[in-house]
Length: 336
Ligand SMILES: NC(=O)c1ccc[n+]([C@@H]2O[C@H](COP(=O)([O-])OP(=O)(O)OC[C@H]3O[C@@H](n4cnc5c(N)ncnc54)[C@H](OP(=O)(O)O)[C@@H]3O)[C@@H](O)[C@H]2O)c1
Image 1 (cartoon, rainbow, N blue to C red):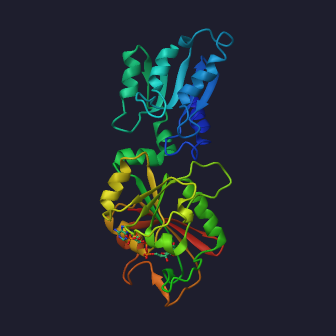
Image 2: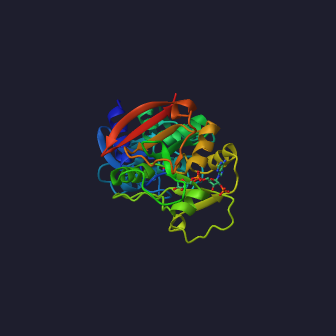
Image 3: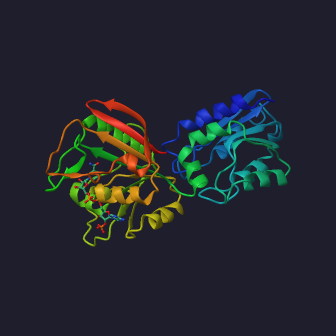
């Protein structure tokens, strides 16, 4: 049987939950009998039931109506069913317990601690398994999740707002908006895509930023990470309000990133001033730089993003796309 059209359907169903399931991958599942879809389930919200469990629960309501026993059904699942106890029980156990005898999987789980174990458990319990059906689409859909496991580091993007003359902010600390309202709206959507937002103590004190995704759709908000050794930081800053915040006192960027790698976070959006942004770029751990560039100059009382001689290209990045947002230009650079 050709399962591609069902796998594409499950992938498309899962897509609706990409902002609420994160930092978990989005997963879709279908239970089919011959060419009929009996039930569809997705992993909707981080910490809630996985897609396979939802599909099985919905199918139970059809038992005795459209099918008589779970061994008549094939489970289509975009990602390898888990075999470990996370926030919910192992999906492979639930599949075996339900009596499903055939499972078709989009992609293996890229996490080396998990990969192949779910498949092995199913096979060891007499379930027929096929995998690598539309695997590339599944990888593309969960690009930060796959990136983290394949590269053994989270995906790191740095976002900066720059004036036409390359400035970040004013030397005297006077608060100014570098870019337009429309660019700042775009940043809200950008934040929604990341598992964590990271900034430095100086930015916190200077700007009192919220750094959450203020968007018109539901989002599991990013974890906020503050890098600072300052001991006078008050929890009254907006950054701490209704947020999961971690303060890291370490200064070595490689150690900081290794520490974050051990958590469920797959991606980091760095939103800081020139000191921390340059420290990240020098560390060679950044994968993408996003620049919102204004046509307006700040002048001599502004602080430069980079040294006179330095450009983003010097750090090994190439311009991948560039387009206008009102009067500003958004430039996306990727590592060569
Ligand atoms: N235009 C923009 O897009 C934009 C974005 C964000 C901020 N800003 C502006 O940037 C200004 C602050 O910039 P900044 O350059 O002074 O500070 P920054 O880059 O925001 O912060 C440096 C902070 O990072 C911490 N840190 C931890 N590890 C570090 C490392 N390896 N290297 C450097 N710092 C490390 C420092 O800790 P300690 O606290 O222990 O020193 C310090 O608080 C603010 O005025 C803000 O308005 C502009």
